[in-house]
Image (cartoon, rainbow, N blue to C red; front, side, top):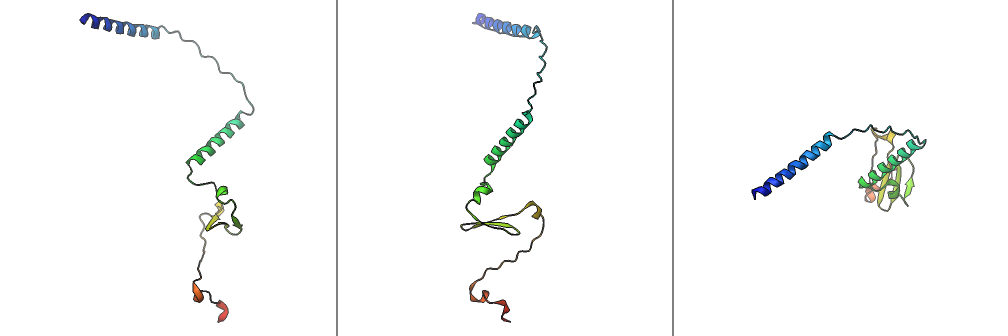
Length: 122
């Protein structure tokens, strides 16, 4: 049994020495110079591929449907805020220039006869 262990250790040592010698004697070859073939549309292709990848990633990560899909077949009301009505839902479009500006929007819901009276009665 000891002879077998000695033979196994010798085989492992021989393999280690062979690997070490091959690493030490490896000949370094100079790296080939890169080719300079220029594709005139390369930048446009890369930009299009990047844009497609970003769009696909956003669609994959977004839990919301695209706005065009949500407002499809809805009635549009133009105004300070563009409104889209679809069934019982009302969607408002807030433009970038309208952000960070205060707006006063008083809202009242008419309930019964008392709320529906005319203000010019005097």
